[in-house]
Length: 337
Ligand code: DC
Image (cartoon, rainbow, N blue to C red):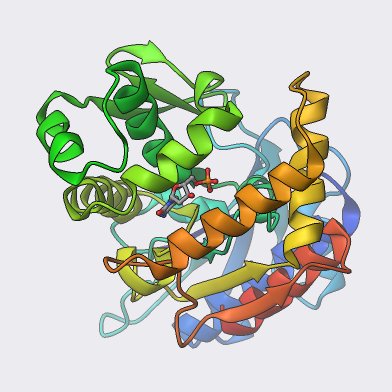
């Protein structure tokens, strides 16, 4: 008996998602192993406890995989385990010269890093373009982590502000770097930015920190340190990264690259509403000027500027709602998977 393993995840517990994921998984298992119907002895599925809407055996039968016994069972619930996951054990008999090729798709790629490619999605664009909203939704839907690289530059800017260092002073900021301890941790799938042991996830969102982050991010030594950390994280796990230079510098070989942009007034209005909701009082025109100044500084800096990679897909969100943006991006991703 030969066993071929497979696993995938769904973004949501609904019939369409489950049917699509089961078909996609089985199609790839069959194509990759060049399997014929009469070689298959049975299909065994297991599901995480958060899937209730549809039976994967039924989904398999409906898309033509009805020529061998089908069975499905619920897996034990494990703390910290992968969510919304469907696993497959396909029973077959392969001749000695054929080796089973296992298939791990979507979030399940995290389960078998040894055989599946790490999924990195690079999102670049100017401030307020909607990158972080898009990144959070994609990370949730694909069951992978979201790495907010701007938060790392913000933590660096915050440290300089706290130490009373002029954030534009390259020499002084570079001297501070050996003392800078920035870490990224995840709790319940959410990124927490830790500066010198303190969770600064909220403090770094204050408007005053935005320009400081842009200032420190222009210094080469800061970028080298941050890019190294980002590559290390992205090299070890599937994630969506958002920033200014992800597709061009941090991960030039990423398979999925998007440049999210929008008119500066639209972006300023988005930030205005975001800050207002957080209780910060800001003047819209001042905010608009700040956003334009930050765009200019981020795009014109000499070292690793805000840049659309040549092979990135440009998505202008000025007149799109979030659902349209997500479906545009997902269509591109699906077409390249
Ligand atoms: O995305 P954000 O507004 O949180 O980023 C804060 C600043 O950090 C931004 O003005 C430019 C800088 N940054 C960068 O230079 N490279 C990145 N990959 C991310 C952010």
